[in-house]
Image 1 (tube, rainbow, N blue to C red):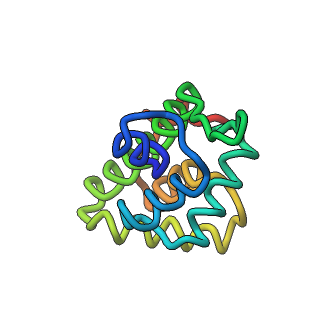
Image 2 (cartoon, one colour):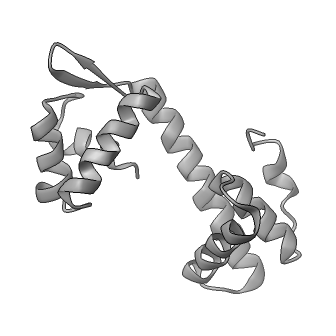
Length: 132
């Protein structure tokens, strides 16, 4: 689950002050340290996942839903690969991470697809769902 979504569920609102969101991510939910929470907020502002309106950060619900769907696809692909190979999910995740060294900074869903193909797993059911 995306950390911003966890923060929204924790607070029950899509509006945060910057310090409140950092506090929820770092201290209340213990998802990351303060520095990582600040980086996530900056990245989310750049990507439009968060919008700053009058000193208040507002979550873009539509983009958050998209992020969740993408994360779900990655998890679904990892589970499919693990099941097909008889591996643990963590082994698949490590293998996907090692693909990054070979292919560079590709989207993690594409890397998962390539990893599955490389290992001989039928990944055809995911082909149309990739945004490439």
